[in-house]
Length: 285
Image 1 (cartoon, helix red, strand yellow):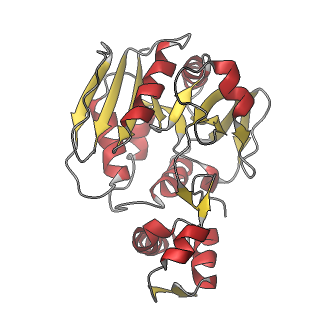
Image 2: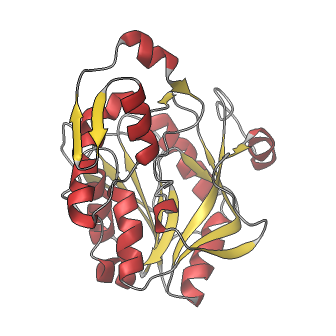
């Protein structure tokens, strides 16, 4: 079965170049690479990549659910691998993900190691990236092989694989979630509802390129509050509880029982204090 690699980009062309270099070095080559481009100015690469097809999505925001669905709709392959544009796949990552969903109808997440500033700048090699990459502190993966995960809220969209037919059966990402937050958590629960088990795959590695992040993600406060309300209306409980607790502790939101509202915007000092090495991760329940 053919393999389609799907990624989204918004104003991170250098990260995209490293992702494509990682794909070029992969033991298994995809049959196509679909890049949904949401950048302010359309991406133009100096080097031609014969497998790459750009799909332009004009937007003022970050409609992640819509963009992922668009990527999947444009793909021809029966096996889909979604990679965040910040992720560089290691040599065996694509092949292991493809084999996993080829053998069983499942939703599979790859392990991601986190790089610091400058770690992927200039020439890089896999050994050096893995030596520098840090394991996520709250996302344990098996050393090798597949491990079923009972909590669908631990699904993350940074690096995952699924059969195209299964993605369609689940219904894709719910596009009522607009902007940032909860769309991937909802997808994890939608997969469970459709009888699709979630697995973490040890040994299938990607390295996440550094970019400034916030913990909690104060820059997405309005999106997170709006999407948290949508999720609760749909599923009956609050998602992203860790972020909401942090927002409430800072006095940014009022949150209790069935009420969630914004009280104020974060100050610049609060934004500066929230800068973090780790990408924002609010899926854990």
